Length: 249
Image (cartoon, rainbow, N blue to C red; front, side, top):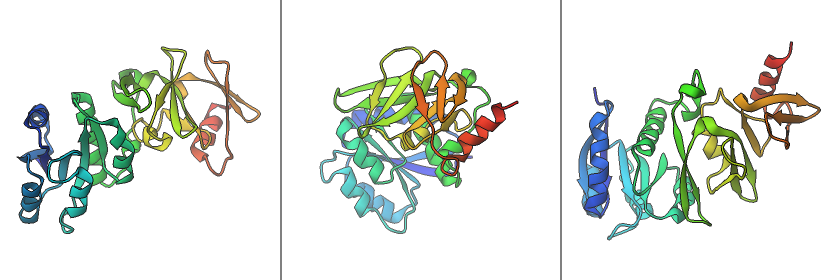
């Protein structure tokens, strides 16, 4: 049974057609309309219920951010932004959108965004999703680097640790020596990974417990990595300290 209704608003028909096939396998979301005209989309939302909008940022009549301001107040609708420009990502997240997808939208990213929407509608955090094993948890995240204007898809299970650094987020992988530089905040990255495998040990750092080696005197040592990760206090990071206690014998 399909519980939620969605529309696509994009002035490019090719972009709409790229998204449409992804809806065919969804059991809980039904695509009820597509619009190349933002004003017609707003008029439709005045008359009919809409739960989710896949919204392009650069529209003809107005941009996607203005569209959000003009949306009917009575319509408790969520937004997934779709854009060809990385520069809109931060603004999109600041507007409390469900997700920001980059064109061309991959099937993996589409379904990840839909999962986040469903979690919001069901009143649970996306990060409360657990995985029994990361080896069987075949999920990607898309890392965007504004300075390099690049997008990289990475396996979540390959992430060793993540840290904030100079207003960006560094993601260290087991498969390469240099970290990926992401424009997305540490908090936002942690919403995309299973919380039972990633522990935040300080304000700036979180790690994958599969690569955990040991803890000693305020620092975490990771497997095959020389650098030690500094640890925060017990009150601020109780989940991390519970994890450390579970390793004691």
